[in-house]
Length: 335
Image (cartoon, rainbow, N blue to C red; front, side, top):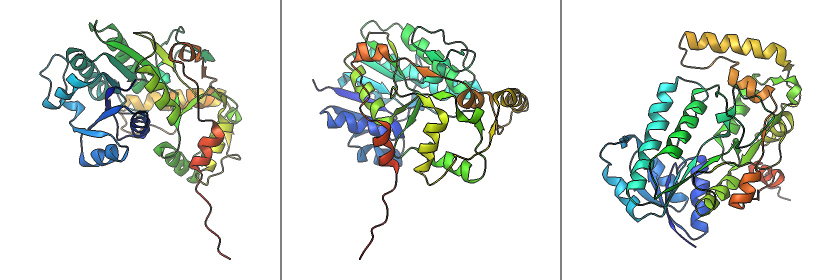
């Protein structure tokens, strides 16, 4: 069954892959674009562009003109978000929470049947220390504003008065694949000598290839329990050293021999630096934060049994394939 879908964030890393997947499966995709560059990227992914800005939306306010296209859509996938690992809650509330709640409200009023929200697995990273997490695990208190606001956004959408519109939430962890900006940023950090393992990088991390996330989002358009929340991953958790060494090798960087510090040193140091920078309202994070300690220094994987059962989700892109796509082709040799 093919349907008409409104997508936000269609010019981003996740969004471009999502739009290509949906169009490739025969769906009609309207991609919101707030700038000329965003429109170019959305068109390159074969989406039909709708000019507009999520910042125009206010819960309970008059919907801007561009939202009129929602009346003809069967579903919305909300993938747009400001993602940073530092900053006060207020900024993320303004940039992420307010537009998401207003879009959800407007979509419900327009008669859209399903709303799929791309959240983040990091909503359970913080006071929650379980090594394996699923949807029944208490989330605890997330340790960065981005994740705290993601969690409150989930709660607002799932509790909204929208009886005619089903809402499904996806929680992906670290999203990777060809074209990810994070890989080059991490490579630059490593080249500058700033890469450091915690406990030799032995702690378990989880992740999802961007095309696997696109598949999960498409499945969530027609499957899944209304009001359901689903972790989605590549289902291959491994020591962070194994994953990051391979990922950064695609950028020509070798971090296998990088220095390491024990968690018992990193955790209190991160807490002091993090707390001091927040107290002083630093615009940039210190070299070590509570979030970074949690990411590098604690075991965390996600049980995707519910996504397999309810969505019919099965990861299709494995690590070998994904890494091969990120590795530049060797130069041609002429004889």
